[in-house]
Length: 442
Ligand code: URA
Ligand code: CA
Image (cartoon, rainbow, N blue to C red; front, side, top):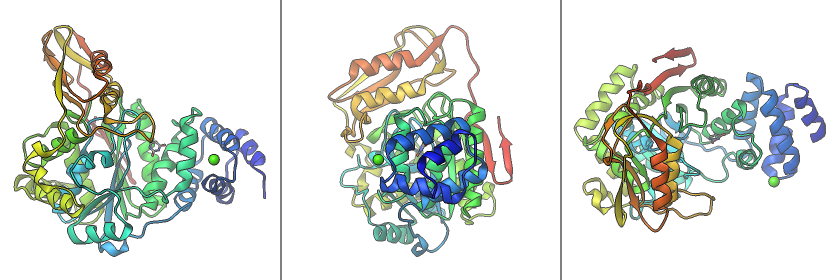
């Protein structure tokens, strides 16, 4: 067998790996038998030299198979997973899981915790009193079979190679490599066991990839890997040039999801949710076409079945379902503090990542994995791109707990660009990517 040095040199010179070569170092990463310095050198070589479509597929499958592969066959029907590449104020999962289930879909969702400026669904759900996110595989499958949806924390034994490689990428400048991002995300989705996958690939100031063309290419490659792995995958490329919803934080985003399902809120969050939901229902074969699926989703929203399903899911996981009727039962921050606009003008720019950081500094997110989060804190945006604002009027309201108020206020002031002249508002949905090709919508 070739040594790790041979493999590093092979990639450094621009060579392509076979599946057997990939398995050698992926297994070594998962088992901790290849030293970090050699893995780091190899990751940098991949970052600089890239990978072919076949290598990316092989890497994804090798990583998926580096640990346990979830078996969802007990659910009965095609399970569909939805994954976002990471956004701010993006609580689509909490809208979609119940809404799609209310329309006959089977949503078995494994989610993560927040890290850095992006939130995590598991942290959001844990702000609901009593709710359990550590379901056993049997509980998870049983709940989806019974009520159509469940959201649980991703178990540590899925794709362990990704855990090792991601930790190294984070500290070696090798995060933004397409084959490494594609294999990282898709290996976890494939190991999580769903028959169909719908992706929300973000682009813009709050996304992992800021440039539209890079985000479309990421979506294209993930859709292709899903196809090659026998898991039909489609993707939406959506804008992260401002938070998706108005609420950023844990309990705050649960409240916004409830507001959407109750028909009290809508906007960008609802539009992206309906589009993704229609893709999920067609991907799993519940509806033949997206237009019909969308009509069904709108009906389930209008007659309250989506909200009733959320309550059912919360209660199935041990949480207090009364939050669906009375959001004041969710944790609430001690103080709500407006951040005033420094000038008259139009909102022309938002640094979405900085807004996510502001929420994190208030205690809604983590700097290190072991940090605890404060479920109550975060911020609620009072403006959106294109809006006119007067000096002194609020840009956002901070929901403040024990820390971070001044830093968060400064981040928000810097993140929101005010100009005397209007600027075009960027689109919300840029493209739909399917195995057949890329459809541009903007
Ligand atoms: N999310 C992941 O899980 N992996 C990446 O590489 C990037 C985003
Ligand atoms: Ca190690």
